[in-house]
Image (cartoon, rainbow, N blue to C red):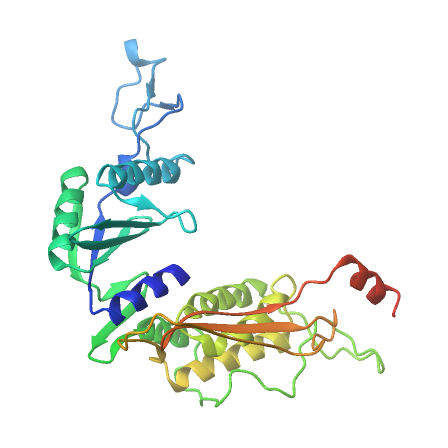
Length: 327
């Protein structure tokens, strides 16, 4: 998604057209290099001469482990024949530069984004791909990977309003009051069930752990366009293996915060600037269990936010040894 946001920010700043295409039955296009057999499918007679026969596959099928790899290989080969170069930093990014201009293709399984400095080049690329694969032309970019795109003179707004409203409804908080912050700064979440001093049971385990795990997974997906919940989701993700009631309450607070502005997202600005700006900060050993620090960063391309993350710092072996002996 960092690559997607970066390419879109670049395209918007240069006023390029952004088109989308969808491949029909993408995995069926892959050519198999391995020798693979399957039993006769339903509808074929398995009696008489065909009783002990099997099928040898020449093309990949959905469900085969090789299918995604072979589709990616087949599509990359087709683009290379069109003189596109595959990026070594992100293998789903392809670029082509000619005297007429630049064309960029982004691939996510069977969803394809095409942009470039010339609408003519974009249309020619689409026609060339349709000659090799059965594709659906979806026109200008509006909806991609569950993300909605709204374009104006100011740029492109990426948001997941529909997904956020669905999440709020699923957890039963449609009528709940909203909160102004995703987390309570005065609450320190921990995996401990009993208080160290009193020995009282202050943090009961959840009866249904899968409900918490599903909720965090959906919040992680929503984090693609919501940098404001990045730290909260990172904190809550640490307790997926054995969540407690306090963790669920904190996760529901994040949902109440999202309910305040479900359509909030990020703006990829049309102001033309290729300057990269990065902001980084860290707390001081704030984790009550490991005493590790949490680093957060935001990276902007011009006026557009393209990357962000909140992550607990790793420790070298020397530091881990000092912590274990209480130094």
